[in-house]
Length: 127
Image (cartoon, rainbow, N blue to C red):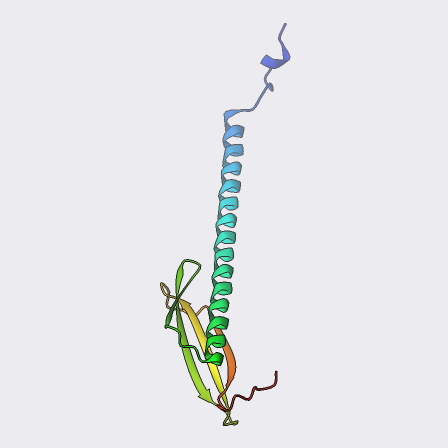
């Protein structure tokens, strides 16, 4: 009398186990790659958000006339801030471009364009 557990179809063959392991390995690698890509994108979004904050702060400082250094420290990182001023058709208004990059990288993460009242009489430009 032969039991069902000892019959010819009583389990997986070695080849079937190897194929199943190969499929699982490919799936695991795909999952790790997707996770790494997601983490990289989240890090880039965080850096661009902080770069925007740095640019907003610099534009506000320029509007109130406060001098700031070209390298700013925010959230534990150093940020290079470049300011370009351009005249406009209105002599009392100046265009300002603020470009922000991580000090460790050579590419701008964020550029903010704003305008500053240069009238000098304390008059505010209507918003």
